[in-house]
Image 1 (tube, rainbow, N blue to C red):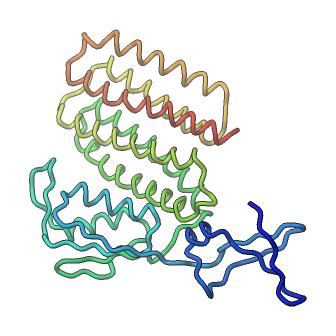
Image 2 (image 1 turned 90 degrees about the vertical axis):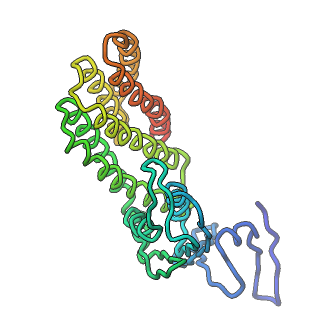
Image 3 (image 1 turned 120 degrees about the vertical axis):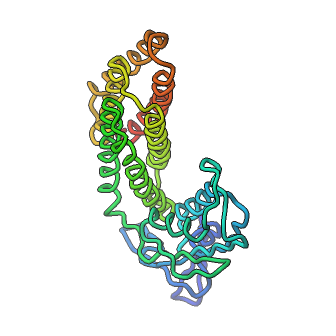
Length: 310
């Protein structure tokens, strides 16, 4: 965009800032911004200027899951202070068909939102506040940690399913929550730093969030199945794990051989599920199909990962 220079007296030159940029960065009259000279360029930024953004919201009568979704969305969007009003001290958990305490739910959710703490609570409201903020230097480390946790979670799912190890399968809920916490942190960073946001990374976080939910649901289903799975099913699950490993490897470093192997593995899984579908118990087939749905997500994830390298 172009701007005309305005001259005041004989020594001062002024140029206007785009209104949309000022609004999105909460720039007001009297605020200070950074101006940096680089050759024939001048860079105007809000670097070093911390602006806290707050919101007040009424979550009365929402069910447990909807309530948590909204709190999580506000955290990811970058709000520094969230006041939550509610007139009813309890809410319904549809899956468990039971009433839960709203304050307890908010405290539990805060543990999944890095840097966010409950600083005040009353009978009908609660305030969450960010006491520490996200850092760009941490983001790459956290993303690598997320991928490592994914492989750990899938390995536990395989071992638990192969040996009907209910204790190990039950621990996947904690791994799910830990990964979700790191994903929330990463999404918050991108939303608070839009100049660093890239499509592929934002979408990668969304796809990973979907996949860990599928792994968590599969673990819950395996617990309900309550028996060892067949060698045929276990073999296919191991092949699916290999696709996860290849995807994670591609994120760190592009390798043509890994990309080809990933494509080949997916075709083999599709063919084998169709081949053994009528020879294994229905519960096993249902579990395989649930996990197979993650492969389509991984395909989208792979495309985003390739965008990172080109």
